[in-house]
Image 1 (tube, rainbow, N blue to C red):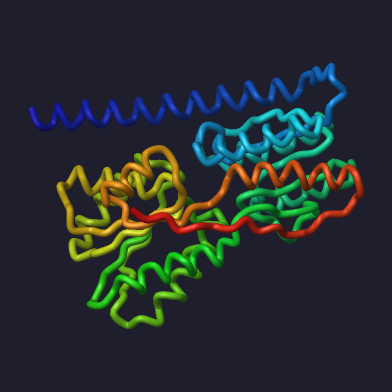
Image 2: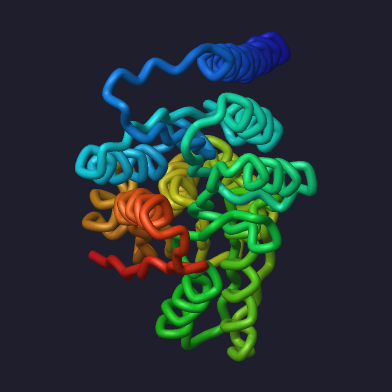
Length: 316
């Protein structure tokens, strides 16, 4: 009976992941077909393609909203596309297709991949300006990066922890992706900051792949292997929510959770004390400034190379 139940659960999990994979492929194919077609713009507006890291992620939807609000004022039209899951290869494919469709400009996340950097150079050669957001690609020909100073944000998180710790503390960390430079920059700055306190020991680091469910799963596994963890830090937007869900599934109320951003029900979890504090970015402002930067580029041909948008600390 137990074996049969385990088999059913395993089949259900496989089915869920297979369904998500198929949905992601279908959605990406749909975007590619849109980019292969003729873009219909009857208002003679600047056509901007905005490629999100994950199209339905609340962080990127807020950024899209900010970009759209600004675009309406500046006679631009936003075409918002992106993978349904965190998938670098799909982002690269969408950038390639976006460039081929010759828009007036592209907004996209910077990715530390040689092919991606070559694509940005190709866009530059075709006089298609690219603004990177959320994650930079400083070695590329992008005209500007607009987003968080991730090194500073990691230091802010470290300072929050140092304010709390007075006894020996074991810390678990969940980052969104090991391939994402914004995540690794936050983590490295955080590690450097807390290393000054000998009472702090980072005992485990996991990746959630920008997934709340995966963050919850990794939290449970982390706590089983490291039951003395006092604090868990999540470095991408959905991590802290997933961490709380993982701890609740174990009925563990003895771990303090710190997170990033203010998405979904983060505010509610903060008010309940289930998340101690969160380093909050301003995705809507990033979207606004990306459009304003492109407008300046269209008008004058030169823009500020790096534009950092401040983060704030939100507590109960």
